[in-house]
Amino acid sequence: MTSIEYPESGIRYRASSIEYPVSNIEYQASSIVSLKATIFLLAPVVAKPILATPRFI
Image 1 (tube, rainbow, N blue to C red):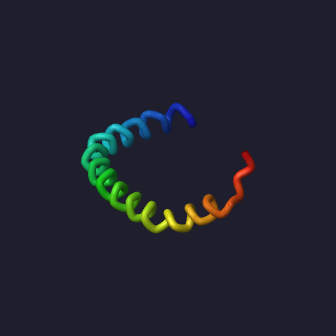
Image 2: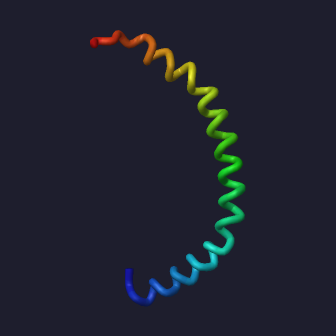
């Protein structure tokens, strides 16, 4: 990273960080919904091998 590019990216970062909280709230809401859906879909797939593996204790 050269010293010429750094201030440029710093300005971009500040501009995007102003918009970030709004998109972050939307992202969190959608990711929670998708996370719940993913857990719901993957639970049987993940649970079967765990329950099927013999325990050596």
